[in-house]
Length: 259
Image (cartoon, rainbow, N blue to C red; front, side, top):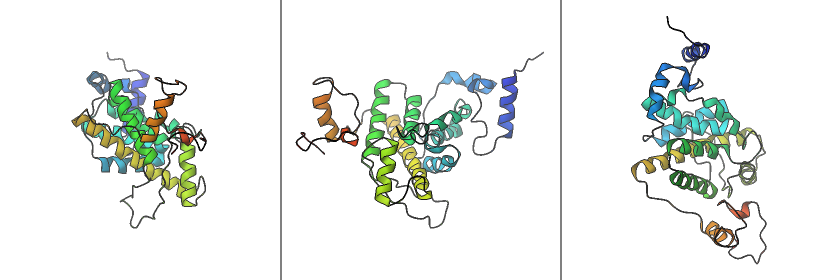
């Protein structure tokens, strides 16, 4: 006689009834024999196509927002290549990141999702920090969004802006200023949807490069290095982190190396 748990039955129903690219992504990793048999293999990365990942992130954004879109696009891509354990990852947990964590306006959800994917797929702490730093530095300094959806004919143009910050509320504010659009407008929603695709593509580019060669790193921006040289642990030791200081701090005109 074989005993089947209630969780197993519900998970099986979810796998059978779900729609979309991967119907069972919301089920518990431990709920199926397949997952139990393959979980020991670990969360192994193999190269993904950045354009396909961007398109999937753009699609997923509608269902769960920016963090969900970035993280989900990477996981579904790996699920297509490997099946479990990626196929059963509970993606719904990543919906909390939209709007800078529950609408709080803090860390951009797209960056939160990309960082979560890196954290899952690169077990070495030093490499995690390096890849995440490169992702966040790229975001701070790049005019976004650059992604243009291919599934619609003649998609309307969307203005770009340089956030100079990893914070959602500053990133959105600077885009609204540059584009002359309001917060929560349809134009802003499309901007965030396309930006989600951009961050997903960049995350995969970094993971692919990490898979091939574990040595390269673009490094911190020059103004961040300057700040750390004075305020980091080896000098005044009164500051922590590597995000751009002048995103939040109003520096005096005579401050050294003000950017």
